[in-house]
Image 1 (cartoon, rainbow, N blue to C red):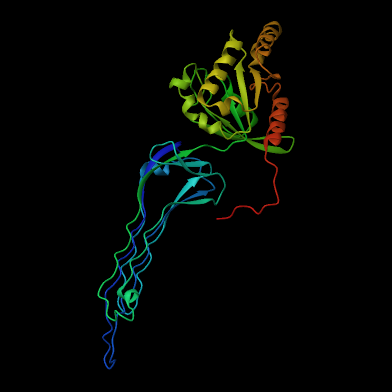
Image 2: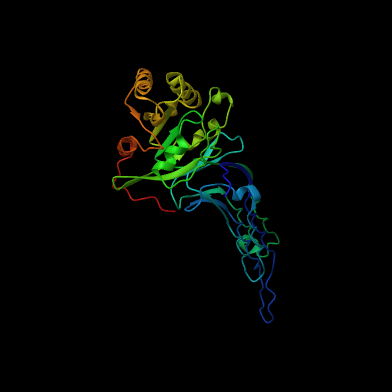
Length: 341
């Protein structure tokens, strides 16, 4: 399945049906009167977060969603049929933006959460509604309200507990493949990862979700490379795991490059809890490893781990630290009733 995390859709709610002008004409009834029914209400356009989806690819092949209009009213006080609603089923974590692609209309973060995007028009009144003591035979009815037409953007932010960051070929995909059942593409050239990958990681009987995004490069905040367009997928993470390639001769500079791009993208990302790890230690001799570890530790404000995704060195320790940070970042559950649609 192809990955798509941003799409533009056009929606329109149904218009209300017109009211009816009608009079009773039954045989043997001496005094007739108005009996025109009201028009039916137009269908409404909804968006609902559902389980089992992790891409917006369905909206690449259909971008127009028009709800049915209500049927007109009829004689004998018959109300027109209400138009059918339309429900846009989206993955959990989808943001709904206005046409300007900036104003957030809704953020669907739980399964079953639903939001109204365009309300259906009310049906018009039939002439029966206009009957009064001074107007016994009204000959007018209202037209139904028109539907609402608008353009919106759907933007998916994958919901993961931990996110992987690093330069291209820092070992992110290898790490994810080593600690989960995810099978991202792994190769010895940069930009192997073209779309985000999710994996469920298990440690000491506990599980959490980890997201791997394409590597960042210098100038990414100005549009260079691929990773910046996917950074939205780690905005919801509780903790970020920053992987630095141990085979690089400039580990301190590599570390600072990622931090600079994070802060340029969003201040909130720069302030997120981060854990740093020096990767590919299996490819280094003891002297080189200690020298590069010391160089990286001198610029990192916090603990630095030594790991290898190939030989699994140091992986349990960093996973335990990640899981503990995730627990610390979770909101304490209150006694309030859960949200229901």
